[in-house]
Every structure is written in structure tokens, then in C-alpha cells.
Length: 123
Image (cartoon, rainbow, N blue to C red; front, side, top):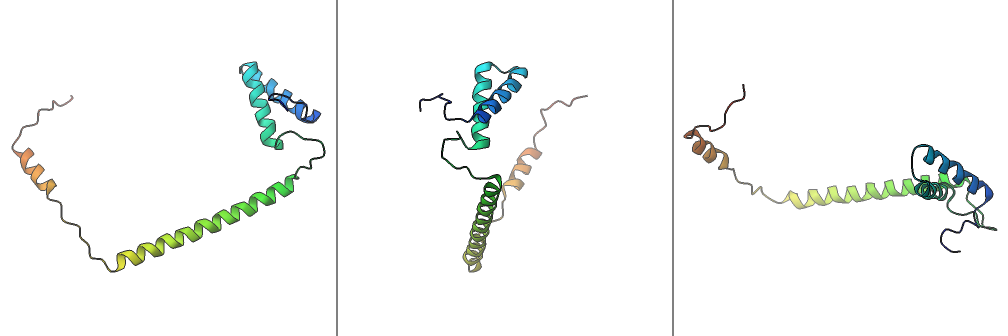
């Protein structure tokens, strides 16, 4: 099938794309852009062209597949966060803090104490 060929889309999908395209044109979108957006919307909603003999998943099957995928993703995130937190505790348990006190603040305060401010105040 060549690009732009809509022969394998069902008549319902073609009507749907036409209505979507009209809606975009009413909003002031160019006809070419409206057509592209309309077909992209139909593809997103229906999963592409309704080819002959191909059986589409029902809405319920799609919904349950999304739930299953979401549960798997959540479980993976929980495992990875548990690994990270346990790794952080192990690495910092035997170490001493090597942070030094910063003296930069005191020296800069001393330097600026002898100078007069050159900024003019807004009134």
C-alpha cells in the first residue's frame, strides 16, 4: 500500500476522519494539516486501518492489557527503588564524614565590610 492510500480503512474510519477534519477546519487549521491530524487521530483511536480478516482487540481487552502493563511497571519501579535505598545505606554505613567547614562566607564578609556600596537606592 502506497503512502496516503486509504483503501484499507473501513468506511466508518473514513467517515470518522472526515468529521474530525471538518472540526479542525472550523477552528481555522489549513485543510492539509486538518487531514493529517484527522488520520493521525483515527490511527491512534483504532490502531490503524481495519484490514480485511484482521481481528481487532476489543476495548475491554485493550483496557486489561494496559492495567497489566501498568502493574508490571509499578512492580519494577518498587524493586529498583528498594535496591537503590539498600545500596545507599550499605555504602554510607562505614564512612566518616569528610565535609569541611566553609570559610568563604566569613572572608567575603570581611572584604565587603570596608567598602562602600555603589548601588543607588530606588525611591
